[in-house]
Image 1 (cartoon, chains in turn orange, cyan):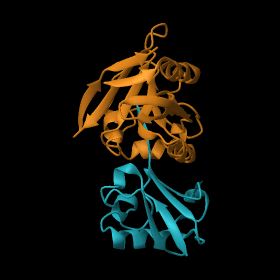
Image 2 (cartoon, chains in turn red, orange):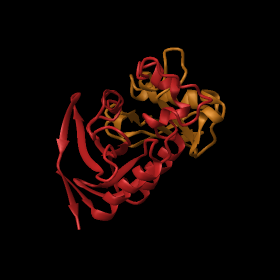
Image 3 (spheres, each protein chain N blue to C red):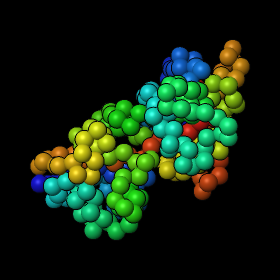
Length: 160
Length: 92
């Protein structure tokens, strides 16, 4: 079970809407099982095409040329490394724990994809929140953890 | 040159849970070698066998990505802070 204040929950949904059709991403910080602050981080997937390609995470037949900016970011996210680093330092400076990350699935369900599972393995046991905009009028946010390669869902309690 | 290496959470199992480690080094590459002498095995999590930094890892000197500096040859000064961060990525 994970707790999150309403305004931080809404910040994730607002960020997802603002970036759509690109994926939005960011970090989650707080203490223990409570998220206190979300930190949006720019999605730089277009600069990481080779990163995805060498792991076989580019769908067959898809042309992700670097000169087609934004195309890959519709289906992938890669946090800007310097912004990610700055956000981690800000979390530390605020006396919070880095609890995990969030990202959006602009057109698919709020469940970890094969890409999510493979890449979350670098950050074991971290919280993974996903905001689906598959039905734009009804965003769905769910939370997961990858424990020993298995997906475990965490209930979300929104604090009013 | 005493520099501080910031260890990301996923690599702290190598460093007895330490979040930062101080080493004497003149370049980023040397700092990583010293780190591996202290905590054997950590370097191969960060670098390819040929010494290049792995694509899913970023290294920062005082907040600047070394890809935009001189890579592992980037010189270090006393008090510099070397950050190591695995990528965060995913997608539908």
